[in-house]
Length: 394
Image (cartoon, rainbow, N blue to C red; front, side, top):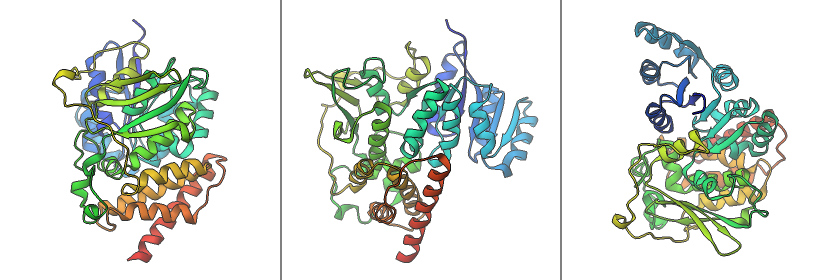
């Protein structure tokens, strides 16, 4: 057996973090949670530290560092405590881990993800916004650091499993296209008129997956699938014309790869993130993940259909941004984060999410991706534009 992997779980208190820690706990000889981070849920982070005894705990909000330290001291947990953006970045590149699970939601996870890539870690990527915003920069950082990236989004992990060698040259491997599946979210089959009065509570009730509120809304608008299309382009070197999306309500086929000889390979499994996480942690080996085996004989018939791009316009906007190139995907992502935040706060109707994103894309045409600083500036411009448009609409 190889040496025990030292795993940093970024976003440990979220759903991906919880699934990762569940897999780690099942294999204490193989994995150890050496670094745990959270945004602001200090109580939950402290409880995880009590259970997993990491070497380092990082809270993103500097105002909570003292409280975290007090909680851990009271519980007799002896680990280093740090806080803030720079501490997250240092943890991702530091000597306390050889594997980084990047599960911080949104653009906030970009710098730590890049730091892990530059440091030659095994990077388990759940933070799709990092590669959506800065795909070329992330791939460059991986090449410089000599590390490896294994996606743990279920769809991209499925594609990884269906390709020879994980991330090969598609043309040399005889790949015709990549097919991402989408559940369709809670509003599959609804018309635009049906969606006019949708509430945040309705949008967050995903039929198959248990996720955070932001990603649940993205699933409901199909923006999540749009971000995954952009991610697939960068991860696997596929042009927009070689990436398709199929709505698959059962969420048992997680994605497919079509080859030029007519073969289509699919990865199937029950909808449980632990499958992809366990695969990525142990790759190229396989380990038990705690997931119920898939019983196809007892499953509902598998159905597939084309997505409704006129009703769920966010998916179409994502393809538009990918084809525009440059930093258009970063503009798309930033505008969407502001739009979803406004929707969840009751300040924007559900259908207004796509309208706001489209307005910002129109206002800020694509520019070349040069460096992280310029990208962050453009990200800020997109957020400012989105908030201004929101204010003017009120």
